[in-house]
Image (spheres, rainbow, N blue to C red):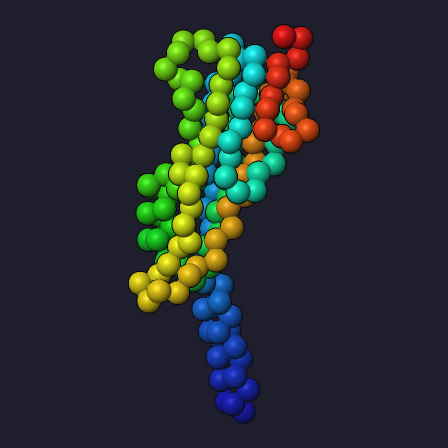
Length: 145
């Protein structure tokens, strides 16, 4: 009678261990593009460009890492592995803005035992509906500009 209960307990514990093997976090960034006529993207990895009714660019990055600890993911976020930046913030009211991945060279993540961790980072870029998107999704041009 107790044997089926023990088997169920072991299965649940095994599933719980597998479920903890994946760490996931979603981060958001906002870029003001009030005076920009063009925006150039240089984004590492997979990304999708979507229109929205806002007047700024919203970037949503979802990161999933398997076989890594919570601390590893927190450190990767802290050092800016998934951050996008712009070099146009030094000029007031820039006409051209470049938004790019801060750390373009993303080396594989390794644990202390040398095993590589599977990492999937997907970025969604929500752009104002006042821009045209190029075919390659790397350049925006303001409508009517």
